Structure formats: C-alpha cells, structure tokens
Length: 173
Image (tube, rainbow, N blue to C red; front, side):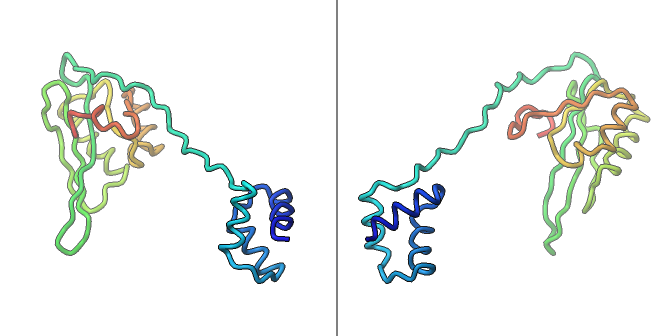
C-alpha cells in the first residue's frame, strides 16, 4: 500500500524527494504511517533523488602581475576598512603608483562613494599627471557608471582583476 502511493507520487511529481512525499501522504492524504516506515520502503524502491554535485566555476589562469617601466603607467587603487570603538566602519581609499610603489593618496571617511573616489583621483592628477591605466578590484565603487564614464572621458584604461584573485592587485593589497 505504501509502495503504491510512493510510486504514484514520484511518477507524478518527479522533483519531490522523501520529505515532500511523506508530508503529502501524512497531511494531505491522512495516512497514519510514521516517517521511519515510509522511508524504509522509499529506500527499498530506490526512489532517492540523485544529489547533483556543485558546479565549479572555471577560471582562467591569472595573468602575471605586470611591472611598469615608468611613472604614471599603472596606478593601483583599493579600499581598506577598520572599525571604531563605537562599531562604525572606517574606510580608507588608497592609490599607489605601481612603478615606484609611492602612495599617491589616502582618503579616510566613514563612507566613500564613487563621486568621492573621482574627486580624490582628480586631485592626484592635478599635481602628478594622469596615468595610462588604473588597476582595481570589482567593488561597487569601481564598477559604477560614474567612474567608468570619468575614466573614458580622461582616456584612462580601467584594469579589473579577476574576482577572488587579490594577488593580481598585489601592489596596493
């Protein structure tokens, strides 16, 4: 009797596992069977669903970290954070020239949106000159349309590292 009901349910509802089948038999159909008895028969009929293995993301091999040959070829930028005694988060925005590892700017505040990032970069460009490219991770401030449009307007190439590979931005990390 239990086997017939289980076969009927699993053919009608192919994605139902043991839990849904048992709850349907118990709550909807009103059968008094306990879960151990139903599960034993469920296993004997080999109705277990195959557990799909997690698909792994295929990632390309990371490119070697390029070494610039002159100043203002590539700048790296990244955020760092710390917390204050009252629990608020303190963020720093750091820009480094990859050629001589010179720290060009450090902006410190509780919130640093993309407009503030652009303002800090423009201040550095005023006295240092503009870089050919800026390397950064995939943070929301760096992916914003404001920063991308600003970089295109100033003809600066944005170099984004692969997700989960902070060593590709090693100079600033």
